[in-house]
Amino acid sequence: MINRFIIFILFILCSCNKYEPICECINVPDPTPMSLSYPNNFPSPNIPVWNPLTEEGVNLGRHLFYDPILSSDNTVSCASCHKLTSAFADDSQYSIGVGQALGERNAPTIMNVAFQNVFDWDGKSSSLEQQAVRPIFNEVELHNNNWTEVISRLKMSELYSSLFCAAFGTEDIDSLHILMAISQFERTLNSFNSRFDQWFYNGGPYTPEEMDGFNIFATERGDCFHCHPIGLFTDNTFHNNGLDSDFNDLGRYNITGNPLDEGLFKSPTLRNIEFTAPYMHDGRFNTLDEVIEHYNFGGYDSPTVDPLMKYVGKGLLLTEQEKSNLKAFLLSLSDSSFINNLEHANPFYE
Image (cartoon, rainbow, N blue to C red; front, top):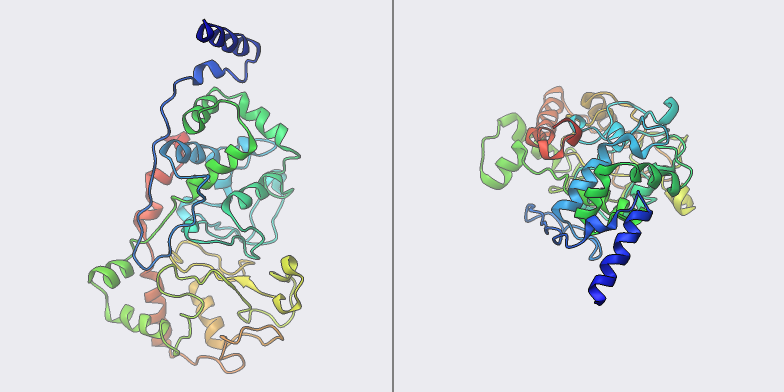
């Protein structure tokens, strides 16, 4: 009798709200757990216990990531600024948002973010879930005013009713589940199958030029390894790498208010650097040759320039051959299997 009463109440609830037909989300199987594989010298992935990876959650997040429905005018998606072909970075110097609004920084790659614990160029976000909310309301990105308008658009879609049901056991779409799903998908965007990896870990082929470039990179000759250690090729911390003597963008200082953080930005990963141009927080360099020349020149001095920038005012003085070999090494960090992985591609074009 009690069971019949419960079923009757559920039927009434379903009939009264066309956007939340919870009757269709009864007895749905539990989401399918997922795990990540990664090299031994990677840190453990940073996955909250309250947001474990599931196949259904990742699938929902993938759809949300590629769907312009998250923008106020249905024109811009997360993928508009984080492109698969650019290793989930932006090939434009400044990202273009709703109404052709122009951002102030180059969108960084979100590759291998599962292994990071601070996000954005200035570290304003301490979790992927926290980071995911910022573009949704940023006036030069997705430009929404509140969650109500975002959720109302999603509730109009039968697709999302079924995807939320499969991922979280409910068709009642809410902001937390949106952020959880996007974060789950982003944590699967991992790359570690480059020529370098095949050589370094498995003894695969490597040219003499690449080998010499690696030796330059990994020693004081090139002085690169401090901020870009082998593995993730980022130390996930903040540095002033001598780009300017005076700062148009104060970087980390905008978050901490500490004068010692003026001009500091997070070290980006060098993995897939072939695909992530333009380079630096403001996209000022279009080519790897320009980046190498910046460090070879030595950079510009300032009160907060990093002590690891030992060659400011002096330069590395690499020969043309050494610069060419260093570039060859950097190009060996390219992982074509990553940017061609259809599991990461737009699900609406399958």
